[in-house]
Length: 140
Image (cartoon, rainbow, N blue to C red; front, side):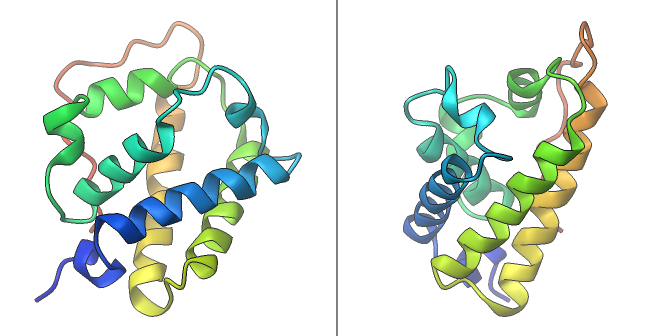
C-alpha cells in the first residue's frame, strides 16, 4: 500500500504545493498577513519537509529542522484567528488543485492540513507554553 506521500507524488510535488500555497495566500488579503512579515526565507521548503514527513515520506523535517514541539512553538501565542485560518485553508485547497493533486489523496491532504491548523489553536493564547516532546503530527 502506497503512502500518502507517494500518492501525492513525492517531495518535489509537495514543494510545488507549498510554493503555490504561499503565492495564493499572498494574493488573498484575508490570508496574506502571516506571509507578509518576518517569514523564514525558506518557509516553503521547510513546510514541504514537514508535510512530506507527515504524509509518510522521509523524516526530512525532524532530521533537519526540529520536532513537533518546535513547530508548535513557531506558531504559538499568535491568538486564535479562525477567519485567517479559513482563508489559508481555502488557499491550500486551491493550491492542491493548481498543482494537479486531486481525488482521495488530495482530500486526505486537505483534511490533514485542516486538522493540523485547528490543533494549533490549542497554543494560540498569549503566554501559552508548548510542552516538550509532542509526538509528530502524522496524517491518518
